[in-house]
Image (cartoon, rainbow, N blue to C red; front, side):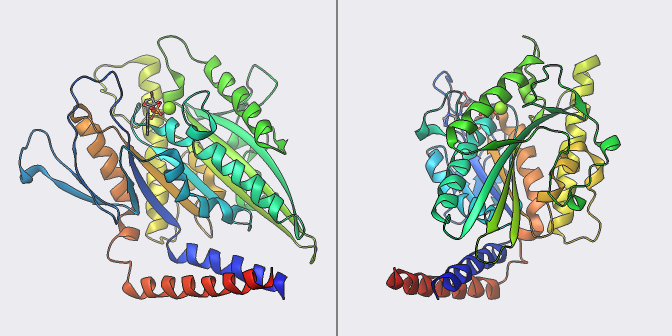
Length: 387
Ligand code: ADP
Ligand code: MG
């Protein structure tokens, strides 16, 4: 009957997602900004199938060209809506009980915040992934309300110098959450709370969400001084918890979505920084490489995944690995001036995902995906006829 078909359709949909790989990497190149005078780009070529060729500005001609391969490359003209349309299927799977982690990686100024949140005070058109994701979660949960009852909750934390702070706490002193003493082991927590002591807020509409995001952003800024733009040196993690109750069978499902705006990946010249700046740089380095190691281990299907090497990977553990789906946005500033940073960003992405994206992707799989697509199309057709 109708309900069985719908459930079957959802199952197939998620199987397709799985076949496409649980780790996906999208590259996004931001446009030149209005104030930039000399606009020389390192981007040589963007292919339909995720190819990106970058040129080395100090090695003119084909010599200095390097090819990278991603699941998708978004050029400077890509809109927020276009970027989201390729992200949407992942978001949908959260409502089916999957855990999903989406994060943006790149040097400061490469567009991480733009992709994840959008410009500050963004209108709907310019919304980043965060708002669009929640908007989708609300509308899909509404459309399923006759069969599943959903509850959605939000947490927002910041990880700075290996300390976790609750950004939605009413306590302005921001108690640090010590994951060690709390013994954070997300997978053993039946309710899937990523950070047990961070406040959780129930949200019913997109305006609830924007209100909380505003509070979070304001709290995040409190620690910053004029000289110290903290937002580029801390990771911010928005966690969306979804609980669903199947009204027919009485069974419960739980999915969570981590939306992460990472600290800037730029290398800090060790000879030039001391004190707090050096400490920050070391913490960022440590956590980003820990994240890289975890994703690399997952892509290799390695038996040991080193989650415990940083707070970041501990907080994200429930949405990295296992059945969870991971999407990394690799953000690039196209300017030749940023060439060496961009290259190290690209190499990071290549390393963490190389195995998944390389030869391992067989043509058999391509066939399986196509077959499943066809089945879904048939099912959709059948459902449409019933309506
Ligand atoms: P990051 O968070 O990586 O430091 P931002 O997201 O703050 O970088 O982006 C740096 C600047 O570039 C901001 O002024 C932002 O509005 C602008 N920007 C980034 N990506 C885009 C884009 N795709 N289109 C238009 N402007 C962008
Ligand atoms: Mg930012």
